[in-house]
Amino acid sequence: MSTSNKNPSESSDDARDGNAENPESAADNEHILDGHFIDSGAESSEANASGANIALEDQLAAALQERDANHDRWIRTQAELENFRRRSSKELSEFRQYQSVPIIRDLLPAIDNLQRALSAAEQSQSLDELVTGIKMIVSQIEGVFTSHHAEPIETVNLPFDPNLHEAIQQMPSAEHPAMTIIQELEKGYTINGRVVRPSKVLVSSGPPSVDATG
Image (cartoon, rainbow, N blue to C red; front, side):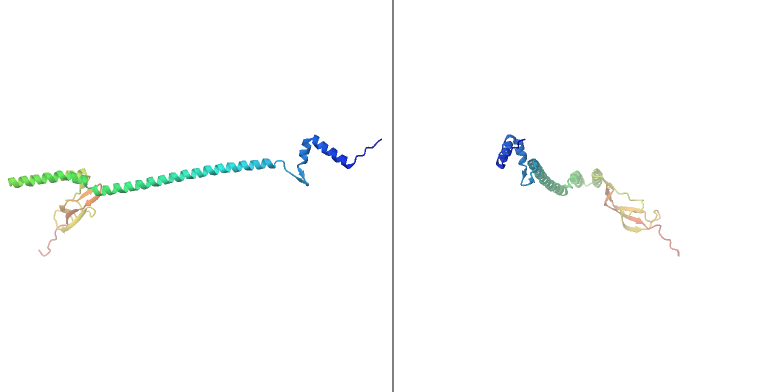
């Protein structure tokens, strides 16, 4: 039985020849360097990390774009709100300045009739015509008040109500119980339940006292 002996140089050459003939084996050997194993998936992990970074950058860009859009909308909303406030303030100021215009316009015909009544009374020197003209004007003014929801406060023969009436004087009355309104001196009015002016009235203090000594 014969034994073939090869010297080390020949064995090394054979190994190199084998690696050349088998590239895959050579590639596998490259994973071992100085006793450390090199992970073949390192490149794949780096690619995944790079893709994740790109996705985060896209999300950040989208978030910044949405932020800018929201900021622009906020600025426009603030501008519109400020314009609304200015417009409302101007309208309120104009309303306060001219809120009396409707009632003045409605009272003008009554003033015209009063002037006509005075002129006719001066020409005819008739007191009856003056009284008739004044009554007509008073009725016309009351109609204006009614059209503006001003209602007269009822007074005579009703109990005195401090919320609606202002007592000018108390006086005895055999015909009226105490705290009953005897006479109206100035008519009061309300608008939608709110007192514009209380009625000025005379109030009964009850029946006159009888002198016991007679």
